[in-house]
Length: 92
Image (cartoon, one colour):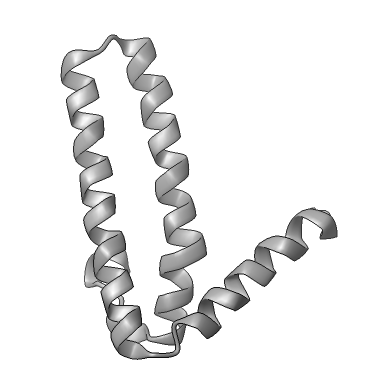
């Protein structure tokens, strides 16, 4: 069970993001940027996989996974909750 001290600030951040992106045009632009950034981060994992050892890859992939997870949970999901029509089919 999540403690309220951990839960409370995270949910406030999500509420602020939802309010911040009431404008559908802004929400669409931010969504497109997040998808572009996610693709670039994903490509960076491929680069590390080709050039680094397994230990470095594991560390890097874990860090990128955390970044992409936060982008999805804290930015993209609130946008798609406010504007479900913007959610790409591949995220369903």
